[in-house]
Length: 330
Image 1: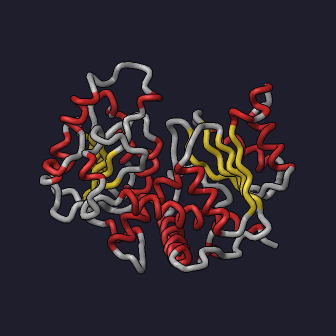
Image 2: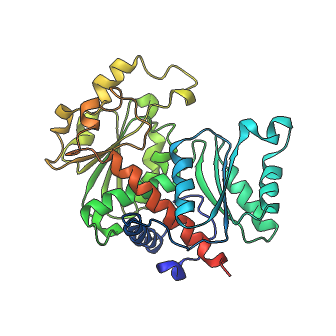
């Protein structure tokens, strides 16, 4: 495992990830993918450590993925849910984090509906000079680093299963389609995918894709393009990632109707004819079938990598926990 080359204590954003760090995550995840294929799917890498999943926002996929990843590494796990916590009695977020610190937590996996909460907890841990790592599992409309990395791993593993690496994406065209405005997944993917020389095309209605997103591609190796129609984004694409419409985050009527959205921006077999013949489709889930993607296409393994993403998620989250936790084992 390449943990000896890893120096990052917290994983809060992909904005400043280096090529070396991306490749370290990809190669470490590939090693753990092999572990997960064994009959005994457990290694003692984090034995004796405590991983606390502090999910201040409801989640099933991400929390379950982190929990099984920690258990596969032989760590002890603590799961927090705000609806049944002392926060209902007035306890602050930082006090909650300090309570888990006092219980001997080594790694805190934080998910919150407000941007910046994982960073605030990481800063508090640093101020206290404790060797506790914080991993951002999604904060508001900021970022979702582990999802961005598992999407990257899914794509790179398809291109070279034995040696997934960032430079495999050079010259590729990838389209991200959907509710980009509210998507922390899209933000993390913009950082990871433009870290190498490819074309990244964003497509959505103008209400879900402000012009300011075009600025994200400045001073990056990759080229970023913004489209308010789907056809130009899909033309000759190698990969298409469609995003969930986050209706719970929409505070205004941003779309005429779901039917109209699917007509213009929903991914279907006929629309994929604009792409390369071997195009693959991704979706971070959960999926609104018949809205972001047609139901039959979602289940077609010739095109869909959605189940691969779920499987990749455990290996990638094992890699992240291992990389930030390996230096804590005495």
